[in-house]
Image 1 (cartoon, rainbow, N blue to C red):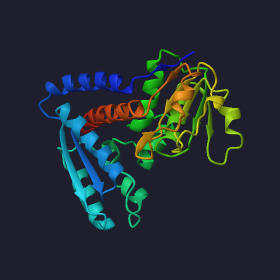
Image 2: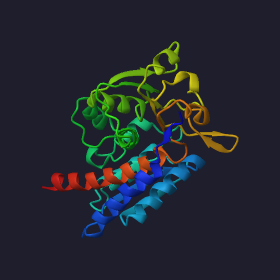
Image 3: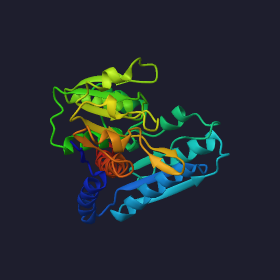
Image 4: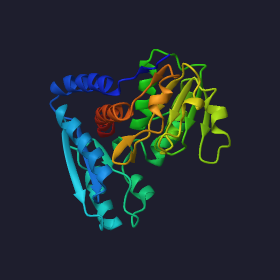
Length: 282
């Protein structure tokens, strides 16, 4: 069998078109502020694609490029201004940040109703207690891509490889919310393949190129590859795509899978943040 390729770009384009249609009739446009510290080439690519997508749907977008030598107080001052700017509904600080800056402090200085990445402790806490305000964009993208296959998540064995606060843990929580039986594997897990082999749904988010091989995948499984790794100048995922697609039922490519969907979910989160701003105002 050869897996059906889940075309994240196609699904994302459909969502962005819907968002563009909604924005067209709005008097006030949803506003996103993107903060980029330093000149990390990968971050530059991510930020540019987010900015481009936002302008294409005709939202309001402002970008703040800051020197890698900036100090914490200057960055906090900028975020305070953005927190109180009514034109800005969503704030996104591109990670990673330079080592002199405490990522946790910076992330948590964004007011929760403008946290379109869903990374603040409050946003994650609400997600874990089943009362999320805005769920992390990448985790939402993963769930959306699984559901796009038509497979019901409820009752399925789901394995998430990776336990980051940005992807692994939120994805595991959202799968639990949808009544999957969830196992989380990580770098200290012994015999990962014993777990992955039982997965009806396998989410790879470990940041290790081609970690998931054909032998580790159950026949007919849905395989979602969140990994973005640069190997010899090429972008590759955490899944050995060419070989795994021979056994999987559905698989996402890298690039063209989770990436475009994350951007679409980010736009959707910004619309949600705009609605939340209305509630906060009244």
